[in-house]
Length: 463
Image (cartoon, rainbow, N blue to C red; front, side, top):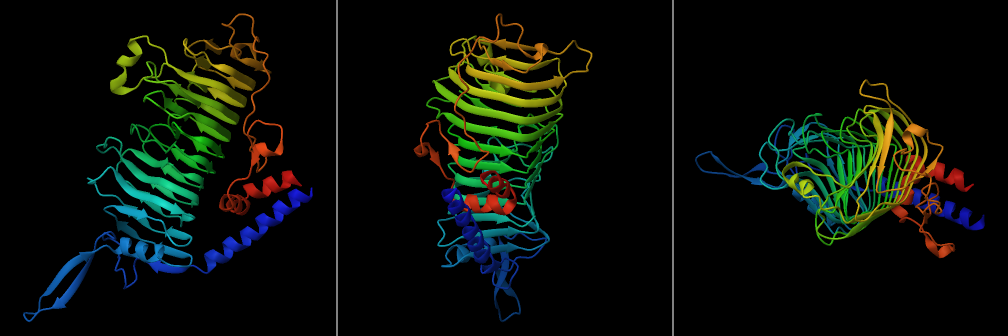
């Protein structure tokens, strides 16, 4: 109890410190006379006048107003804040690059509009920054609704960001992927709104890869593709309180598309609601994988499905677009999926096969568990059913229709439940039995969880 109390006091002290730092931040307003930004104009290139000539005409040019504000804030020795006030601003492109000398906040209150035809593959980039806060209630408008899509285009990219918070931001109508997270550590994404038209293909909400300790909380995502897509190299990801739909669901993958992929380990999706999506809780891997890889320690728990197609699905023969020929060659996936738990998943399925676990014949899924699954189907295409291929899941309190009756003799996998990350406590359990197997998240993330309310619930559990 003494150790727990010490941790609680530490969190409270850090919370006070974070609040004090924010209140004392130096402010760099892009609309000030120093930086010259104005609503209706491009704040990436601010027009200025050099001098008055003999004939009464001005020589004018352009300066990088937002870039200059960021440069000055990032070089500040104390906490700083770049502010974009209310209004609508055009933004050709922006790169917020560190490292910065102190904690820094980008406070977007207005709406930033992307160009119709961008010159690069990323509109807004945040990179190499420690202790970044992106907030303000503003909107990033990609202006991509039903427009031409750019291959691999990202509206907002976070690269090599650590101990940071992104909150109260809207991403609207991306030209392809809304938010990309790569090589980041200990970052919280909280109270985001991400929206694209349902029929706008490949408009993923949040793509996460090669990152550790990412939390996505209290977020609404409605797009034309995956609400959240988890790519190779993801470790210790928590998704909670997310409403997804319309879209393609919350997906691990697709994996097995490239050689030398890094494993996906420790993904927990809990307390989420999916509405009208084409998939629910999904793991997908490509056939004919160019190299072996793994996806393990995955939990989907306390999920509500509302008229969702394929509510629970493992698809190891996933193909899409121009690579459909890979599925026709009948070469199985070499991605090993193991230690997966689908627990307390309830609601309604829009398709008769509500549970579809189709694993690879070359590396059958290991240690998969279905527990407290309660789904209904009221459509006219048959009765509620399930199927399991190349997997023998452990079944606990699941109705016969959802219990993979096509696999004789179930349940047959009596192995103990896998050691999975326990996010009911601020410690992360890594499988061993001694205290050395537990580690604490970084201080900035703990501070934010406390302030946002999730930390309060964690403290209640500790006490």
